[in-house]
Length: 338
Ligand SMILES: O=CC(=O)O
Image 1 (cartoon, rainbow, N blue to C red):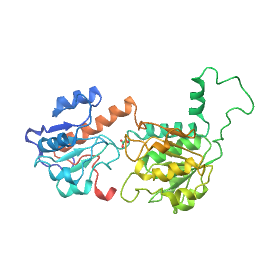
Image 2: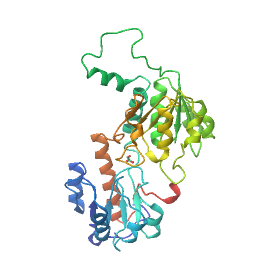
Image 3: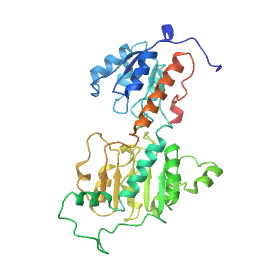
Image 4: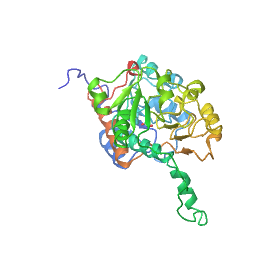
């Protein structure tokens, strides 16, 4: 039995759980068995007033990345709110510091979406240099393809190129493993250097200086979380350090890149391409990014697999249940981690 056991913070150990979006059916059913759960059956994002009402009556809130759980909202929370069990790995939608000061714990769902997000990253990384989207679009017009030719639809080779990984956590490492198998040379920048053995296993070279790494890579993939320290980390100055042939992939958070600066450079041909699954003001997409042949835009689907969404739900349930039983949730997020 874990040593941190305390009596359940909820009467009868059965918390009132408010879920802000529709979750996989099996997850909702299990929540119904274990908790006094309130679901969002029509899956429309909760307007602010509904979110305020939710934090006033909930013991546990289960938000997703679209719900802004900021200091203003937390200030209106009822006395019973004890846990915010985020359905998602990134917690940039939550003011974790304020929550902690108010005695509200925060948990997330790390690990279960790393492989799916890394797979999507590879798909995007391959798609832009090999012009997948252009080719597929062209096939929609019957007359557009008149046959194979030696100079037709030439892209750029992947094998042997340098990939820079910005943020070498679980997802970054899952990308590194896949990238090595594609013959890419893996470079990374991370706040902390990996242990030597992990670095060797991943065949990854660490750069203490992001600027120096940016100037040397052919592809850059973003995997750091969005925090005040990473907001616009890839600003105009840093983007300009990159080779004009370079391609950027982002499956992390839109806020890490200055989208206007990126759009300007893509339009001007100062960067060869980008594949973006995340945006600064989702679901709005910077209009300057649309319609460019070398830009692949996706609707934040990096972790969107049936299996992943089930496992995220299982993690949320385990975090709530463990907390309700008087223990520390296994995926507790503390401000020092951010
Ligand atoms: O983007 C998805 C997540 O953070 O889980």
